[in-house]
Image 1 (cartoon, chains in turn red, purple, orange, brown):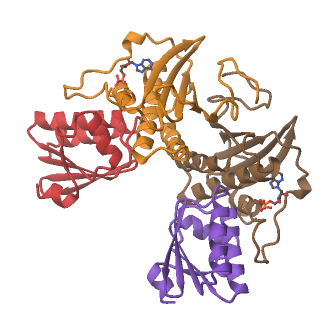
Image 2 (tube, protein in one colour):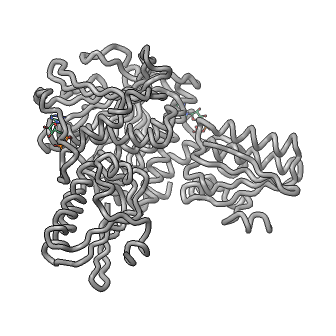
Image 3 (cartoon, chains in turn yellow, cyan, blue, green):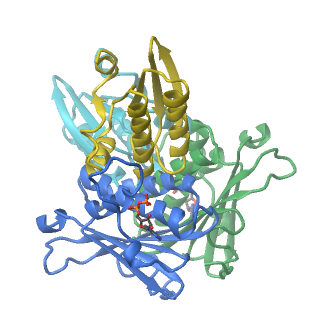
Length: 110
Length: 110
Length: 163
Length: 163
Ligand SMILES: Nc1ncnc2c1ncn2[C@@H]1O[C@H](COP(=O)(O)OP(=O)(O)O)[C@@H](O)[C@H]1O
Ligand SMILES: Nc1ncnc2c1ncn2[C@@H]1O[C@H](COP(=O)(O)OP(=O)(O)O)[C@@H](O)[C@H]1O
């Protein structure tokens, strides 16, 4: 798993490549919380189009990002969900809780 | 592995999906030899763009297709080789023996 | 190779065994098991969504073993047996059984429960994923070994999917 | 789990063992082993071309066992041990060792040779692929077991690549 950040205006886009599982979800969590809590970036966008698999610990990291962003009144957005990532949010009954878009254009113009 | 055929003019294009290995290379061989030897199709083209891996038995099937087409003076063409497929032909010193193109357009206009 | 071992699970090629994996409890190896399971479930004949379900269930069960049975220690042994099982009376098709074995302390079965899903909070999702993905989920203690048994049938009955 | 077994190969988590696979000699399972090896070689730290090389070598060695040691029988046992080995004097980095074990008849080492590559004909390529892909390739008979040992180092010496 690799995670890198792009910054535009008030937005940070995290490009994630590879599966998110127990081996690396702490890293995702850390990057998200730093961006939301410490940097107070108004809009944090996760590009998941290169992520095939997300496990329950990965979902937990995303939920932490979402909760942190609600705490500081910022936005937390996902796009590019693979079938497996979509399923896992559905199984967690979280698909409707997150702001989810198909692609980057839609995510950024939202 | 799935193999299906498209027919145009004097040409048959085989679309192969999935790895070619010991489990299915006999099937590839059979399809090729039927097309070249029995049907005498003047140009047989293998679309390998959805094939990630070819093992030595798969290479052997392709070599049989090539030899059969030489016997009947027809053409045998490959396109869409993955890095792994390219490597395996290189290791076999066969990359220069086969007619290899990058994509379908180039293969068909050749 | 051909004798039954102490866990009553027979090695490769006896008794429907398709694949056995032995690994240590390092989360870095989870992707390796997924890589094998994605292909094995395809060979077995599952649809793409069912392949993802089985792979996810095995991954989450391994994650739980690493976190809860072994408390995050990365050098402890895990065994994964994948076998074909004959249909039950209520099932029309063969099943895919995964047996996960660890040497951690015995598990109190009453603790094997996920949290309620109507809260938005991290954690407590793994067992839900496993139960929602599989037709049968069982825990058993055998000697010093914890055994988690997961089964998915090729044509699952509708009733077993509504859990 | 922790005792050494009869083959002198120790199980998961001892002695650098990363993964052990047991499967039967069915070509349908080749893709399953590749699925595991592709990920394991990535976790180990190999570059994409080296991952493909190692995966290919293991695949071809398994193919040879299925075809030659077991003559196409699909129900015979195969074991695959993947372990980390310490660098040799001539190597600067760790190595990835794969040990493939089968119960077929002993192999005449003089027969373990590929054909010349200057002819265009099918077959006889597998051993070439294996030798070209790996830094070390060894065959050994241990009791009733054929053992093929393949090693690739993380930073292979140039000399060992020119085979
Ligand atoms: N393999 C296991 N060994 C011991 N306890 C387990 C195991 N799997 C699950 N549990 C228990 O079940 C609880 C719920 O597990 P799960 O739904 O996966 O969520 P989480 O692991 O995030 O707590 C765990 O907190 C743990 O107490
Ligand atoms: N695992 C094995 N057991 C017995 N013989 C083998 C094994 N691997 C290779 N051989 C011998 O080495 C020869 C060359 O093998 P290889 O280069 O893979 O080509 P092929 O398998 O197409 O003949 C085989 O024909 C066989 O005689």
